[in-house]
Length: 387
Image (cartoon, rainbow, N blue to C red):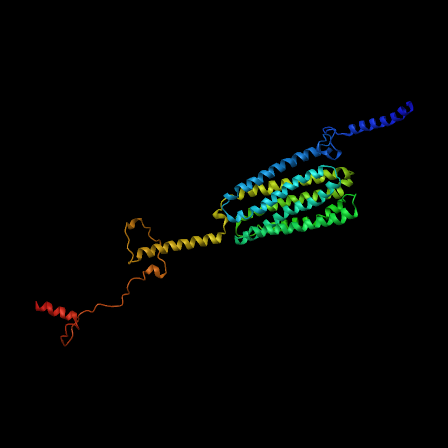
C-alpha cells in the first residue's frame, strides 16, 4: 500500500506543476477558463489586440448608423440621378462592415478555422468595396460628360460580376491548395498576397478612372469623383505599406511571426476608416444637396437664357401689335420691348396690305359725263351742282 502511494505522488506532483504553469501562462486581463486562442483579445501586456478591437468595434457601430441614415434619407433625395447610387452605396457599407468584423479573425490566433476565414473573406470583402467604387466611377464618367448615367440595376449587376470573380478565385485556392494539398498547414505570406492580385487590379483601375472624372462640363459630379480619388489614394498607400511589411519588413526586423497578425489587423481597420471618412461621409453630405445653376455647363445655361429672353420679347411684341386681339386693362403695366425683332412678327403681318389708291378727279379737255354707276366721284360732283 505504501509503495502504491509513493508511486502515485510523483504523478500528482507533475500534474500540480503543470496546472501551476498553465495558470501562470494566462496573461493579465484574461480569465482562467479562456482558451489560448483568444488571449490577444484581453491581454493587457500585448495592448495592440485591445486597441484594434476597440477601434474595430467603433467602426462597426458607425457603419451600422450610416446604413440606417442612408436608408432613412433615400425618400428625401430629390435628384433621381443621385438616388440611383444608393443601392451600391448600401452594398459598399455592408462590405465595410464585414472588413471591421474580419479584424477579429486576425486578432485571434491562427488556427484551421481562422485560416480559411482569413483567406476567403479578405479578398471577397475588399472586392465588394472596390467593385462598388468602380461601378460608381463608371457612372460618374458618363454623368460629367452627358449629365445622364446608367441605371441602378446595371451598376448592381456590375458589382456582382466583379465580386464573383474573386469568390471563384478564393474557393479554388481553398479547395486545391489548403484542403487537399496541405490539410494541417497554414497559408504562406507570398501566397496570401498572390491571392489578392485581382483585388489590386480593381484598385488600380478604379484609381485611374477616377482621375478622368475631373474632365467634363457638369461640375457637380466632379465632387463625387474627388471622393473616390482620395479614397483610392489612401487605400493604395495602406496596401503598399502592409504588403511590404508583411512580406519582407517584419522578417528583416526579426519580428516575422509576432508582427504578422498586427500588421494585417491594422491594415483592415485603417482601410475601413478610410472608406467611412473619405467616401461615405462626404457622399451623405452631397447626396441631399439640391442642384445649383452654376454647376451646369456654362454654354447650355447661356443658350437657354438667350432663348427664353428672345421668346419673352417676341411674345410681348406680338401681343402689343396684334390688332385682332382685344386687351382689357391698363397698358402702363405692360413692359415695352427694348427692341424690335427683325422677324415678321415685329412688323404686324396681320394688317391688310395697302395695295390700292384713291382716285383723284382731274380736268380733261373734253368732258363727257359717264353713267352714275361707272364714275361715282363725278356723280357726287354733279349732285352738288344740282343743289
